[in-house]
Image 1 (tube, rainbow, N blue to C red):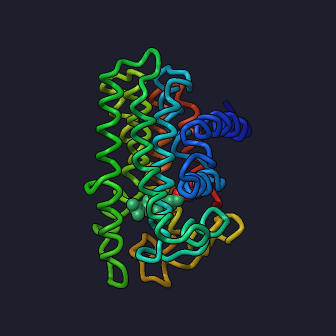
Image 2 (tube, rainbow, N blue to C red; image 1 turned 120 degrees about the horizontal axis):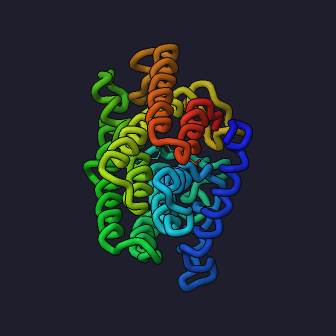
Length: 297
Ligand code: GRG
């Protein structure tokens, strides 16, 4: 697969994910419609679907077709969407725009937005608990445990708490690393592990996928820090410059833009060499590391 083919790979995987996500939630008119409309509003607001695609690409590297991995791919995107809804609430970052349109609470009100996030989180586990044909139930159980831990107080939520606590204070690189590897990195790492576990990857293969996920997760958040300074609203779908305005603990704040860029490049190069070590079936993972480094939104 050449770099020019990455776009068609992304498009084909996005299509599969989109169709599966459609079926993962009750229809908008299901009673009570207010909650289902809010859940669908945020889920179908045009995200990149990077995390579900990483689940599929990790599975592909271990020889699995995409279909049996779709419940896990959807589960991760449901959790990601819930985290965005809650992060945008007035009690947290108080953002008006996400994915290029008004945030969930701006449209549906705070109470429904809070509940839409809760409902997406719980629905994620209902979806993941469906056992696809050909996947041993024990592997699904393992995946459920991994995703719950990654999203919980020692994963994504822990990262969010330290992110809030660090606001407006001079942050050490150690604190920034904790925030980035937990708030953002935990879920991305879980994507790689879920794809591997559900595809029957061996111990060594899973260890490589995990390290790839750790490198990519940190690189993803560093590029997000950089885009918050350099990106524009049209591409990012949200207002830029907010990290500086809020005194957030970021890589550029700690080390400067140049060093932040250099570290993101090194992390993606390391992810690419890990992908290469997995052989030709990991080519999408190789290209996805380049995509994360060069993304504009
Ligand atoms: C509030 C429960 C809770 C958790 C908060 C993930 C998170 C932790 C907050 C979301 C806000 C944020 C800036 C997280 C950092 C991760 C990140 C860059 C999210 C945006 O991900 P993209 O760019 O978004 O993949 P799309 O819209 O493309 O899916």
